[in-house]
Image (cartoon, rainbow, N blue to C red):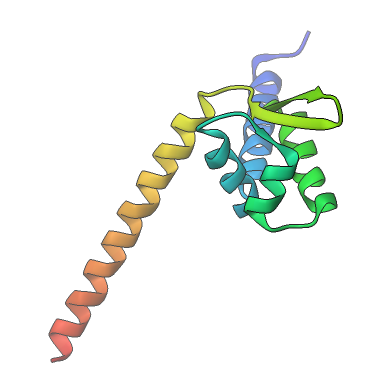
Length: 116
């Protein structure tokens, strides 16, 4: 039986793995697009303006990590978020991003003001 440190280490590795999956601008955009509704692979490809093979790679990673689900209707594959809770993480990180940008803008403004 694994001790608590081994289990905790494994949890940190899995956590980092999910974060690494989300550390891609196209995948973040896909998550945001899927926020509203289920969408076909063809529609996603048009919105993202990427080759089909590239979309397929991104969707494969997102499916493997349990972030999106796919269903097939004839020849059309539709994607949706498997865990809508991911949107909470997405939104919180976006808020943090904007806070950082605002802080940097204030700093730049202050430096410019002092130089004048």
